[in-house]
Image (cartoon, rainbow, N blue to C red):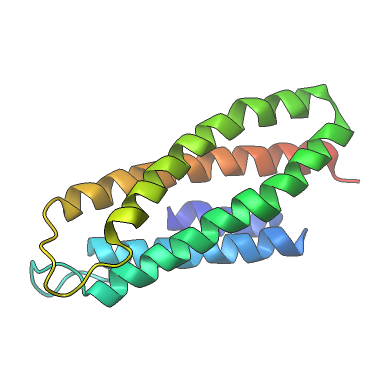
Length: 156
């Protein structure tokens, strides 16, 4: 995931401030995900679950990222696709519902863990973290497809 965001930043970085900000939030989200999951270099020191504050921070960044996508970036892309041609509009129309599916997974994760407390039993957390990781990976690929289409076919 981190490699994908780094490539996206290299490819589209500096082309649009909203997309730059959004890709930076994506990077933050991925780093937090890696910490929660205990991926290198953030390996867990023991098999214990992450601190509630870490989970809450991840949920907050997740919601910020989703909101930026739905209320800033996607609107800009949709408007550009409308202006630039039917093929781009068809692609956007095909991809947005698939992105919405990943939004549902993220909202479910947030609803379950955003207000977790230290004494909460987090049964299923590792599985839920895996599910949100897969959803984010799929979402990033779809978003990158939209952005790539926009910039490769429509930059003025």
